[in-house]
Length: 306
Image 1 (cartoon, one colour):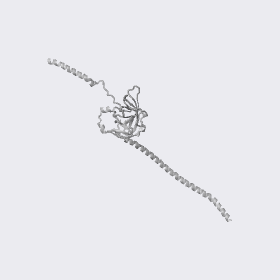
Image 2: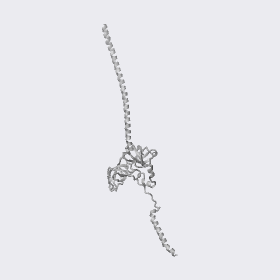
Image 3: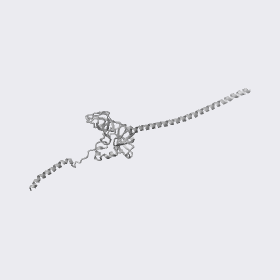
Image 4: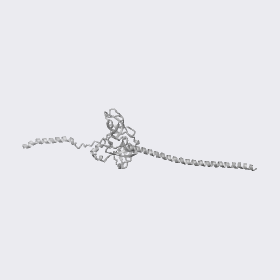
């Protein structure tokens, strides 16, 4: 009986304690896995945050590297003799209610020494000139605008003309190129310096097509700019040194050199028809003087006879 009771008691204890032990082991295992997964999740969140931070830092470093490359190109621009250079950033593009002008807005103004018609260039070549000013900002008229005209010379054949803008996404036109003037497609056009606004020899555009149209006395020449207006971010501004400005003559000579705001020749002076021209009246005055002298000579013998 004792053996049976002992056997039965052991079996009963086994069947009672085994489920509890299994449940305890399962609960313990579940808790361990839960704690493990919580730790893994926290570690993943930490790693994900570090990855996002590294991605942002990499993007910032790439942006700074691109900016450094652009600024290095600007710094490689060597101003002509007698000119100085300063940098500026593009703040906005194509201002105005209808964006009628091809312009960009810079973060430099009259307080930085800028003036109207200050040349604006980039690493590729001429971009435009200052059109309007405020104390801390300025509007630049691009060479692609229809109101822009720049005297240019072909670098190879030294053929001269006037480079005129035709608007956004359109080729520019080189006007007043005579039929016999040599000019090749692909030739580089540089500033001639005749208008007195841009220094001589700055790259402006490249010839894309040369031809003839009907009975015109001039060739039909198209050119493309050397820069992309939509990719402008930093530019260089050129200014004449004070000693160069002091050395220039003022008044009529400066006016004959500069012309109007768009590089066109100055208007003809107005002559009042009611005021006699000294050059035209000179022969008449000489004739009257000779007539009076002849009359005096003819009258003198009569006076002596008396």
